[in-house]
Amino acid sequence: MRTGRPRNFCTDTVLDRAMTVFWRKGYEGASLSELTEAMGINPPSLYAAFGNKEGLFRAVLARYDARRQALMDRVLAAPDPRSVARLFLEGVAEFAADTEGRHPPGCLLVQSGLSCSDADIPEALAEHRAEKERALRERFERDKEAGNLPEDASPATLARYLVAMANGMCIQASAGATGKQLRDIIEVALAAWPDSVKMVVSPAPREASLRPEPAA
Amino acid sequence: MRTGRPRNFCTDTVLDRAMTVFWRKGYEGASLSELTEAMGINPPSLYAAFGNKEGLFRAVLARYDARRQALMDRVLAAPDPRSVARLFLEGVAEFAADTEGRHPPGCLLVQSGLSCSDADIPEALAEHRAEKERALRERFERDKEAGNLPEDASPATLARYLVAMANGMCIQASAGATGKQLRDIIEVALAAWPDSVKMVVSPAPREASLRPEPAA
DNA sequence: CAATTTTTGTATCGAACGATACAGATGTAG
DNA sequence: CTACATCTGTATCGTTCGATACAAAAATTG
Image (cartoon, each protein chain N blue to C red):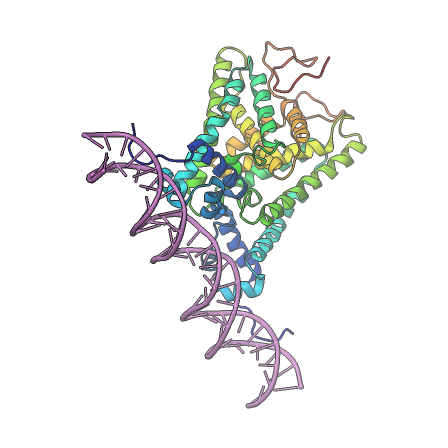
C-alpha cells in the first residue's frame, strides 16, 4: 500500500467544486484563494495534487468530459442522423439551462476561457469542443455510407452546424435564456427556415447577399 | 475653446487599439500595461479619459457597436425575413473569420468575457448581444404583421435562433474555422435539416427524444 | 518502537495587477 | 506677459495574484 500520510479529500469532489468556480468566473477570474476555499483544501494540497492552476483546470476539463460522456453515448446511439441531432441539441439545452442549481448555466467549455492572457487555455477548450464535433462527424460519415444521409450532405458541415448551434445556445443560456426558449430554438434548428407564404420554396429563391454572385 | 493642454491622441484610434487587446486576451486577461502599450499612451492619460479599466472597456464596446452598425443597417434593410437571416449570418461569417488581420477572429461580444470575476462585464456583453437580438425580433414582428412570415412563426424565437447561430459561428471562428466552413454552416442553418431519403418528411416523423412524451 | 514518506496548515514569497501622486509641459484666457 | 486649466511622463502606490518554505501531523515499513 502507498506509504505516507493519506489525503483527506476526494479528488473528484474537489474537482467538481473547482469546476463550478471556473465555470462562473472563468479561468483567469477564478483566483487561487477562491478555488481553495471552494474546494475546502489549502494551497499546498492543491499544488501537490494538480501541479499548478493550469493543471487543476485541465483535470477539471477531464472530469467535465467524464460527466458528459453519458449524454454523448446516448446521442451517438440514436438510430438515425436526425435523432442524433435532436438528442444532442436537447441534451445541451437541458444541461445548459439547468435550473436546479447543479451547476452554472451554459457550458464550461464555452464559459471558462474563450480568451485569456495564456493562449493555452483557449486552445485546450477548443480541443475539447472539437472532440465532440469529431464524434458527431464520424457518426454522420457512417450514416452517409449507410445511405441514411443524402448524397450531397456533408458530415463535417452538419457536425459543425450542430456544435455551433449548441455553443450558441450555451451562450444564450449563460445570459439567462430559459429551457423553453432553447427548446423553441431547437425546433427551428431542426426544421427548414420558415419561408414566407408568399415566397416560392423551390427552386432556390433569389436572395440579397453580401457575397458577390459567382459569375453566371 | 476648451482650455488647458490638448490631448495628443485620438480617442477612436486608441479605442480601436484597446479593442484588439480585449478581443484577443479577454477583459481580465488584458492587463493595463498591455493596454497602455498598445494604445500608445500612459496610464494617467487612460484614467483621465476613461475613468478606469471597466470604463475603457465600455467605451470599447460602444466603439464596437458603432463599427458594426453599418452591417446591421444593411441587414435590417433587406426585403424579406429570409434575406435578413442570410445577410445577418453572412455578415457575421465574413466578419468573424476575417483573415486580413483587421481584427482577431470571432466577435468581441463573445470573446472578451463570458465569465469574469466581476459579473458586470458578462452582463454588459450580454446586453450588447441582446440589442442585436431585439433589432432582429422587432424586424420579424413587423414582417409577421405584414404577412411575410407564417402565422405560426415566432419572431422572438427566430431572432434567438439567428443570434445563437451567429454566436456559435463566432466561437468556431475563434477556434480556427475558415470563412468557407462558416458559409457552409449557413447553408444548413437556412435550409431544412436534410432528412434521410428513407424517412417520411410529413407528417412529423417519430424521433427519439430526451424529453418525456406528453401524455397522449 | 524508530525510520521513512507523504499530506496538512500557517505564513509568506516575488511578481504583476489596477490605479495615482506629482511635477513639468502645453495649451487658452485676459 | 501672467494666471489658469488640462494633459503628459515618471515613478510608485497598496493589493492581490499564483505559488512555496517549513514544520507538525499522520500514515506505512521493518
